[in-house]
Amino acid sequence: MNEDIFKARISKHLKALREKQKLSLDAASKLTGVSKAMLGQIERKESSPTVATLWKISSGLNSSFTAFFSDLNDTDGKIFPADIDIHVKTLIAYDPTVNFEMFEITLTRFHTQCSSPHKVGTIEHSVVIDGELGVQVNGEWHYLSKGETIRFEADKPHDYRAVTETVVFHNIVSYSTAMHANE
Image (cartoon, rainbow, N blue to C red; front, side, top):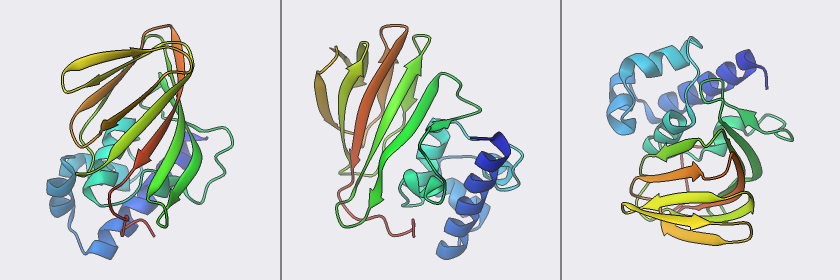
């Protein structure tokens, strides 16, 4: 995806979320843990968020991650300009009738992706498709090979690490309640 299109889509959805919830940048910053300055830069298309920053925004504003891309063709996935070692492809976009979304995630160059807590009650399920994956939950690393799975509560910090040069895994994010701000 072109970086300008990426920035425009993120900006558009962030503005829509704030307007719908009648939030100032300051109020959105307090809810998301992302600085007011960074939120402003994202809205003005001056900065591309990292995957971690976009998760903070979506969690804090009660939106699914995929809602930021719902009107884009995602057959090739997203390469985040600010995160060149992670590639995120939406396999199943968020659906409020089932409260989950599913991704194919590729980590390259032994990358470690740190993830901040999601909303209370959020569960993640990961299955390794190719390579070896490390997942840290509650301070403990779990190592998975092709075909192996892990399920954990994602409402606390958790990390993903490519143990091999490249790892591909499917990740299902299951929310305890419907997202209300993503439509």
